[in-house]
Each structure stands twice: as structure tokens, then as C-alpha cells.
Amino acid sequence: MLPSPTESSLSVEFVQDSRSLIDCVVIAGIPYAVPDDLYKLRLAKVTQRLRIEDGTPEIEQFEKEYFRHQPHS
Image (cartoon, rainbow, N blue to C red; front, side):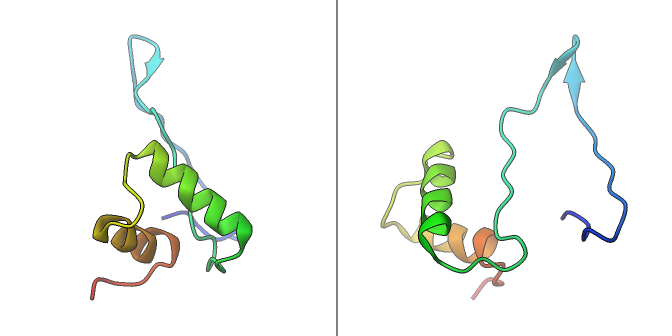
């Protein structure tokens, strides 16, 4: 979880042999996403990158948890 803009923030990068081990960073639903065109585009790009297929229960759960920050049902 990232701190709010009023808090200080720190970052950590994991490296091995001077190369970053981080392949992908996802920042979603800040602070509470409204499902507009940009939201839909971001969701599509992130799920495509993560190889989550459209129309599956997995994508619905991903959207609820990571884009809308809703708890498990």
C-alpha cells in the first residue's frame, strides 16, 4: 500500500547482479477508481500484461480487489 500524499514515502528495489528483479509495477485504483474510459483502458492493459482473460471470474475478482479495493465476498 502506498502512503497518502501527506505522508513521506520510501521505496525499495530488489536487485541481483546490478539488475532489477522487478518486472512490472501496478498502481491501480487511486484513491477510489471511477469506471470511466481511462479506468477501463488501465484495467484492460494491466490484465493483459498479467495474462488474465477478459470475461472470467478471475478478472472480476482482480478488478474488485485491486481496482475498486473491495474485500472478498
